Length: 327
Ligand code: HEC
Ligand code: HEC
Image 1: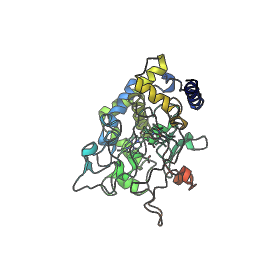
Image 2 (image 1 turned 180 degrees about the horizontal axis):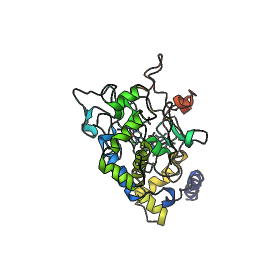
Image 3 (image 1 turned 90 degrees about the vertical axis):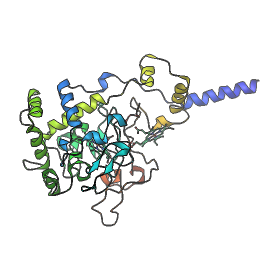
Image 4 (image 1 turned 180 degrees about the vertical axis):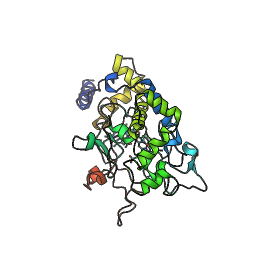
């Protein structure tokens, strides 16, 4: 009897010694707030294929609310596809050239202030030394200051041939991108901004926000305002438990104990959004068509974080621990 009790006691000690503290509950202060009209503008633009070169795909096609703000596929079918989610197919006549090389992540809570790095490989990142404080991929430097990495990110899918802009020769945006014209008055960003400004409903609503000469950064900021507000997900049973002690179901409580204890999930999934915002090699093999088109010897490789840092270490190879787990 005493032996059994001792074993239980030692087991308890081991568990207690291993457990990480629970995070602080998420509060409104963790998120920036926006005027309602800007959020609604962002919503309409998020669902509007007008932002794609051939006017046939929207942000929502790959980040749809009914599909957990992703697209229900391992690798998205971008510009040239038809339909939504797992029923999306390549259309005849305008077949997509390739699948998008990486999984489309969910956007839950990505607008929280502590998210300062975007994409699986962190190629958009808040940085003191970068132009306007945000490092962008090569050839995509910002033209104006942006309030967040999230807003800066929104200026990139619209330039990607396979995601949204389409192939050279198909439309004015794609041709500008292909010719390397991104910035300035004849660049792809200006062409898209002019398209939106030519629609009175959009132009008037931006004007009512005090935006006269519509710039692509205004459009991206509206998208970020919508994503931040609409895809905030901070009212799960776990959130309520942290906030005011609302009891969890027994299975939930057991899972929480494992997550923050023996299973060691919280060594990486730490903090109020269950992420340390770091990069971890998690043994995930590449299954996409690659992202290394400018290399002759490893054309179909996806070098992940290594391509951004120039450091080909396996430990930085892939997969940023991106965002709060879908709650
Ligand atoms: C064709 C599908 C597709 C479309 C259209 C698309 N995205 Fe994405 N999105 C992706 C994929 C794939 C990634 C991940 C790419 C990577 O990490 O290299 C991504 C990443 C993101 C991220 C970063 C998420 C994170 O955790 O770092 C944000 C934010 C985002 N997209 C917003 C948008 C917005 C805003 C639009 C419209 C302007 C848009 N997306 C259009 C597929 C798409
Ligand atoms: C070594 C660090 C590490 C540990 C430990 C870890 N994870 Fe992860 N986890 C990651 C990374 C990296 C990702 C990939 C995020 C991405 O790019 O989509 C991830 C993704 C996830 C996702 C998908 C999240 C989403 O929003 O799509 C879930 C769920 C998850 N992990 C659960 C767990 C659980 C449960 C444990 C403990 C048994 C655990 N993880 C332990 C690093 C870790």
